[in-house]
Image 1 (cartoon, rainbow, N blue to C red):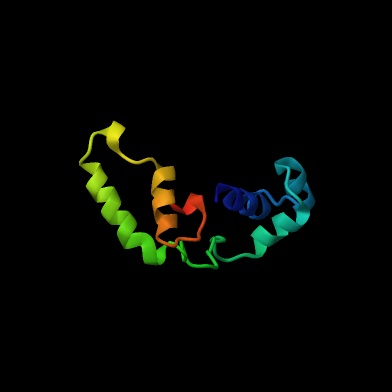
Image 2: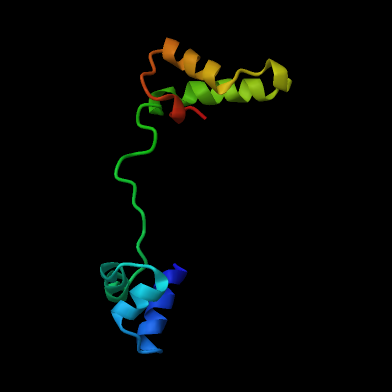
Length: 99
């Protein structure tokens, strides 16, 4: 959020115009205005819950990972094998959701 502070500093301390700040920092004027008018820093908020399809299979996956953590590395299942095992149990989610 250093950009926001820099924009505000240039505007209030150095008395630069919005256009000058935008030009020097390589930003658009609406972006500069937006940061000058905001009170709080923008925060990203996830709109959907994390791993909703994995939820009911999470206990099984955790159990597998705990069991295999005790095995030597070459004998452990890969993420793809874990994904295939979950599919056999009825998992319909994406491969990327499996750790």
